[in-house]
Image 1 (cartoon, one colour):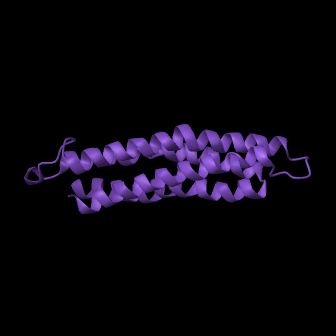
Image 2 (spheres, one colour; image 1 turned 90 degrees about the horizontal axis):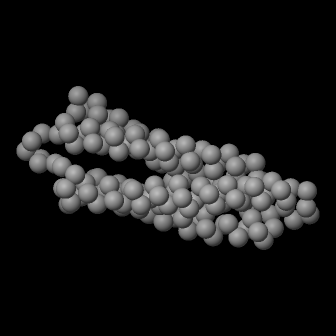
Image 3 (spheres, helix red, strand yellow; image 1 turned 90 degrees about the vertical axis):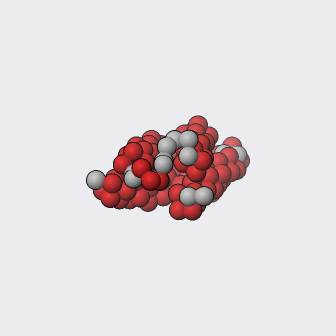
Length: 152
C-alpha cells in the first residue's frame, strides 16, 4: 500500500501542481495580447488546480503514515514541516494573489474589448502582480520538490 500511496503522491504532484504553477505564466501572454476570455479560463483552471493540489498533501500524509518505523517520520520532521509550510505559502499566494489578479485582468480586458488598444494600462497593471505572485509560488514549489528529494 505504501508504494501505491507514493505513486499517487508523485503523480498528483506532477499532473496537478505542475500545471498549477505553469498556467499563470500562460495567462501572462494572454494579458499581453489582450485576450480576456483566455485569461478568465486560465484563472478558473488555476483556481481549480490550486484547490486540487490539496490531494498531493493528503497522499503525502498517507505516505508518511505508511512509512517504515525506522524512518521515524512525522509532521515535526524538519524537511516535512518545511515542505508543508512552503506549500501552504505557495497555495496562499496562488489562491489569494495570483487568481484574483488574473480574474481582475480578465474582467478589465473583457470590458475593454471594444477599445482600440484592448491591452490597455489598467489590465497591464495586473501583469506584474500575476508575474511576481506566480514566480514566487513556483520558487516555493521548487523548494518543496528539493526537500522531498533531498530529505536533509
